[in-house]
Every structure is written in structure tokens, then in C-alpha cells.
Length: 256
Image (cartoon, rainbow, N blue to C red; front, side, top):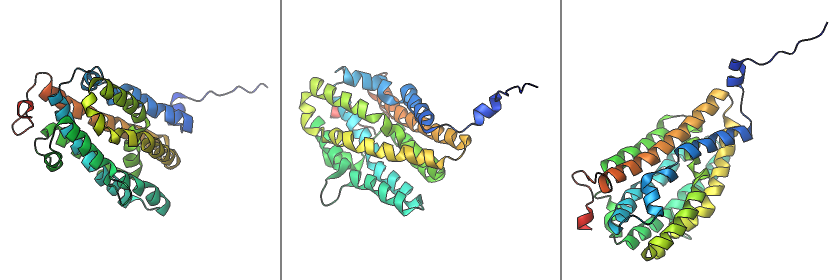
């Protein structure tokens, strides 16, 4: 009697663990759909249509995000039970805070803010940052504090997409805003830091997501991180482009 092959049903397929390549493709698809390279504010930047004041508002608000990155990474570091993981992850804190041999990403971002014409010490205090920026960035800290370590690590995987955006950004900033040339060290450093970081993180996610449900949680964490980046630009666009309504206490372009 002939043996009839049994096709896996849809439920089995939906629960099947993704291979490394399938998972990476799924994560990259999130970036294609949701990463902030497509946001109208960034498109204006790359087309040379932002004023100096709008670039100042961007540098100031983005600084708040930059300033919490080592805090975010320190939270993840503190949750890692494995010394191998902690040794790998602590590099991220040094990359942004600096050490005896490197000034770090935060200081490099302050140089960019200074190149726009802002006072770097005033930027460092956070005066004038949009409430929408604070809300979005603080939600990123909530993700890494309150969700699983797997999801916290997965949320960092926007680094998979950032080198392409950074390469384009540096090219366009040099082209359209030559007066920023002395402040672009931050981006140049991230071109070699981000690929190493994302390689470690995606391997961690693949090795530690033991079920399809956990892989889906990791993918959702990356979606949420992309939404946080997008929300920051939404706040900037609303306050400084259209309709141009900065809230009370926020940076004012006319006072720049």
C-alpha cells in the first residue's frame, strides 16, 4: 500500500522555528518597513531642505537619545548572567561614554551640536528638549528594564540598518551643510562600531530564542524600537516643520 505524505498544517508552519537566515530576513524586513530612514524629516535633511535652526533642533533632541544609550546598555549589561555576554556588551558603554583612550560617542555628538551653532554645555543639560522626545526615549529604557533580556537585546538591532543610513547621511551633510564638516566624527565612528555590535546581537537572539514565539517577541521588540525612533522625528517635524508648533519650554529657532 502506498504511503501518503502528510503536509504540515498551517499551525505547524506558524510555530516552526525560523533558521538563522530566515530570522535575519524577518528582522531586516522590519527595517525596510519601519526604520526612520524613510521619515520626512530625514528626507528633508538628505535633500538639503532643513534650515540651520531645524538642524539645531534635531541635534539638540537627538542628544537626549544619545545620552541614554550607555544607560540603556548598562541596564542590559546588569541583566546578563553570563560573563561572556557581559564582556561583549560592556564595549557598547565604552563606545558612548569613552575611556582613557577614546572620547566616546556622547562627546562626539556634542561636537556635532556645536558645529550647528549650539552651545554644547546647554545641549548637555537638556534644556529645550521636546516632551515627545523625552517620552519616546524613556520608553526605550522601559523596554530594556521590563521585558525579557532577549527582547532587550533584540531592540538594539536597528544597528543592522544604521550603517547604510549613516553612509548616506554623512555624504548628504557634507554636500548640503558644509559648515557641519567638523562635527561628523560621531557618524564615522559608528560605521565600524555598529556592524560588530549587530553581529553579536543577532547571534545572541538566534541562539537564545528557543521557540517561534520567542523569535516573534524579538521581532516585535525591534518593531517597537523602530517606532520609538520614528516618534522622535514625528515630534521634531510637528514642532519645527509642519505645523511648526514647539510646545512651551522647547527650543525656539528664532532664539537660536
